[in-house]
Each structure stands twice: as C-alpha cells, then as structure tokens.
Length: 151
Length: 151
DNA sequence: TTTCATGTAACTTTTATTGTTACATTGATG
DNA sequence: CATCAATGTAACAATAAAAGTTACATGAAA
Image 1 (spheres, rainbow over the protein chains, first blue to last red):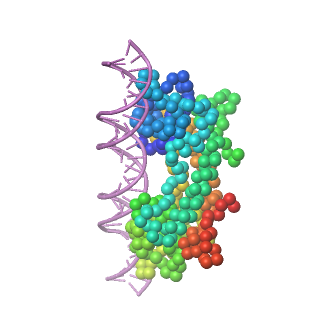
Image 2 (cartoon, helix red, strand yellow; image 1 turned 90 degrees about the horizontal axis):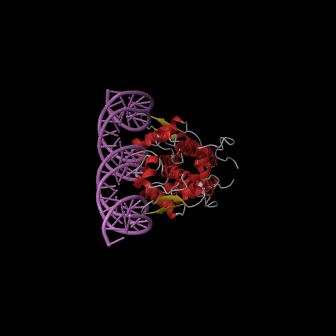
Image 3 (cartoon, chains in turn brown, blue, green, cyan; image 1 turned 90 degrees about the vertical axis):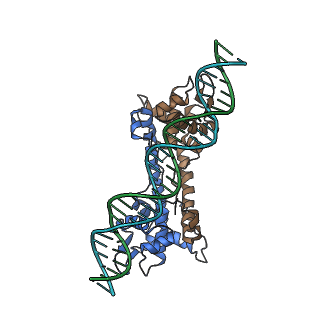
C-alpha cells in the first residue's frame, strides 16, 4: 500500500475486526488484509487503543478486538483518535510571520479551518463503523444506505 | 519557504498585488516578499491567470496585476483556480480495490468528502481577498473584522 | 535589436510518509 | 520455568510529494 491515509487504513482494519468478533486478529493477519506491514498496523491501531476503541492482548491467541459495538463507534471518534486533520495545512513557514500579510492570511485561514474542522467533525459523528460494514455486505432490503446528507 | 501550501502562497501574492494597484509586480519582486523562488510564483500565479483572476504582461514594466477588485475575488474562486482540495486524500491504493471492505470505505469516505467540499466551498465564497487585506492593515474604526461565521 | 519580463521543461533538493528490520516486553501454555 | 506467540517501540531505509533551481524559449516595449 503506497498512497493511502492512516484514516482509511484504520477504518478498513476496524471493519475486519467487526466482521470477526469471536477471535482476536493479529497485526500480521490484518497486515495481509490491508496489504501493508504489521508494524504499520500496530502503529495505527495503537492510537485507537489509546482512545479505547480497540484492545490489544499479547501472547497466545492474542491480537486486536473491538471494545465497543460497531454502531457505537463513530467516524469522528476514529479520526479524533488518530489526531489527524481532514483539512490540509495552510500555514506558511514560521520564518515568514514577520510579514503582516502572511500573519493575516494565516489568521483568516486559521479561523476558517478551525470552523470547518468543527463542522466536519459534527458530520462524521453521524456515520458509524456499522454504516461502512453494512455497505460492504449490504442487506437485501436496504441495499444502499450511503452517507446521511443534509440531516 | 519550506512548508506552506500553494493556497496561502497565492493569497499572500494576491494581497501584495492588491496593495500595489498602480504598477505591475514582477515574479522576482513577489518572490522576495513571499520568501520563495520566482518560478514558484509564476507557477502559482499562472493558474490564477488561467482563471482570469490576475493578468501577466511581458517585457518592460511587465509583471502581474489583479484583474478585478479585491472585494469581488472570493477565496472560493482562488482555491478553485488552484485545483487543490482543502481536504486530505483518503483513498487507498488502486491495488487494494479488490477487497470489498476497501471499496466501501472508499465509497463512504468519498461521499463524505464530496459533500464536505461543497460545504467548504460555500463558506469560502463568503470570504473575499479584501477581507484579508483589511485585516492586514486594519481600519481604525473596524480594528478586527475576522472571518464571517454562521452567516 | 537589445532588454526585461513571462512560460515552461527538466532536474535537484527537501520533507513527509510509509515500509522494514530488529529487539525488548508481556502473557499464555505445557 | 522455559518457550512460544503476540504486542510495543526504536531506528533506519525506501518512496513519494512538494518546493526550489537552472536553463532557455517566447514575447513585448524602448
């Protein structure tokens, strides 16, 4: 896996854990599913563990498990746990801040970004891990749920 | 300038052009203001030229000018001209799409991102280049305008 | 026709991310 | 208690994206 974000990697792993609720999955197994490296899996899931979303056990039959039902894990929680922003960085180099124009560009954009972050977080709160899992194996009577718009 | 986005570079350049309406500014002069390279300036402003936001003239006394009043240039237009997304990429590697879970993660996130893009664009439409310029040299009676929230 | 500017291609450097190796740590199990 | 199997983490290598640089063609004005 070359060009993916940690967020979608995390979601992918979480859905796998959700679909295998009876046994823990090792980083090695997950790495095969995600086409990446076990250490990368541990790095990403480690952050979700610190946030109380998954649990890890060592030793025989150890591995990773979901700690909560998928319907109670929102994408907002996942993305907050990763400490990642959905928005690109727009600030300039620290050296530039002497210029008043740079400062005001940073200030205006910074306010905008902070505002937008909150807005996006509120929308991510409405999508759960279960929503993704259901779309992966759609129920016959509810073939396409999709993201909830304009709610 | 090492770690900055093209968008804030563009905004910074545009404010400089706005504050010097009588003469064209060369990429070399702008590069000094922005602490970067003339070619980088030309690359960024070239996209704004294609979008009709700035004009470039060659030869003696040539350089860059704003083609419209700053109050009529919205940040949405600028960011659209750069063909850049404010949101990070979340898709996985093309090789992964065989997995149904990856497809549904991509699908859910893709819908979300598209939705969010539209939302952010609508908000950027409300901020103009003039808003940034006024904050850089605040008017005594309106010392701090800020970004228009919740309007 | 000389000069000064943009336009652009090609390449180098830098930075961030991801992948990898190696090893310490911890818990179950015989 | 020794062993095996897993996570935890540090350190390093490889890769990709972004920015910086050089070089030169093109066009407009004096």
